[in-house]
Length: 343
Image 1 (cartoon, one colour):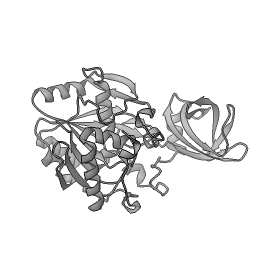
Image 2 (tube, one colour; image 1 turned 45 degrees about the vertical axis):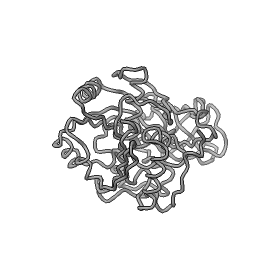
Image 3 (cartoon, one colour; image 1 turned 90 degrees about the vertical axis):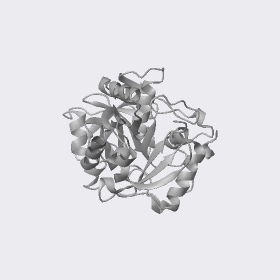
Image 4 (cartoon, helix red, strand yellow; image 1 turned 120 degrees about the vertical axis):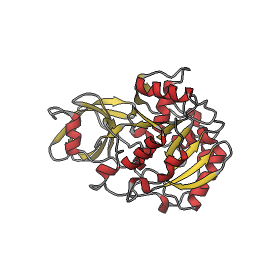
């Protein structure tokens, strides 16, 4: 397995810079991972592709306004991307600056926000915001929506609503679980009417989801850690569906990653934990039968995940098909419904 196995050619104009006019108006490519068969649909066709007794698992994480810009007290420009809120005053963050930061450095962010650099933890800096009234309130007041780097524009008023799923409720993500962006109330109601059970979990998506793989051998890549919580109600619903012959449909790679991490030792367990699970071809899937996901960046860990799920050659064919049919790619783009290879 080489990094180059997960590359493909993508015209820049197919990278979606804005969301579709309506959430469920996006397109849906249906890929059967066993046969390799491909069908083109609209996302509104999803209820007709599901069956009574299936269970749909959604990630209810909520994106925080994690991006802050400003300058060092000495004058140099800085950009802060919060990775994780530690408590009411402290965060872990990526910081872009002209020179490396030392403990004790003061950052002036926005109009009146002061941050102190406490130290470094790997690629992240620990920052303290004294007398800020609580980090969540500070970010809501002074931060901006952390759009991915391939969206080459500044966030506008619409992004605060559209870069968020309609069922988001647990603040903590710095990137949206983008497969969920296609769902609206009408579509969820149609799935319920079809006999599909809707359940939730939480995985706070970190900035590491955009980190490129920089090693030739993917096995040497160090996966970023993300926190997840899997409720007992969700575990029970999945077990009941399985016992009745239903399928488990994960909305997004984040939902899939949490479910598979919770079952890594064999039996799926409810609870909260950190996961560094890195899914590559050869992985044995224990929980998820079908995956709803957007199209992923070349050479990314997420592309490796879908190759593991559906087969590398099947994904290559599907992506060539999507490029040829002018699907829209990445966070604000179109979606796939993938049947697990060998399911």
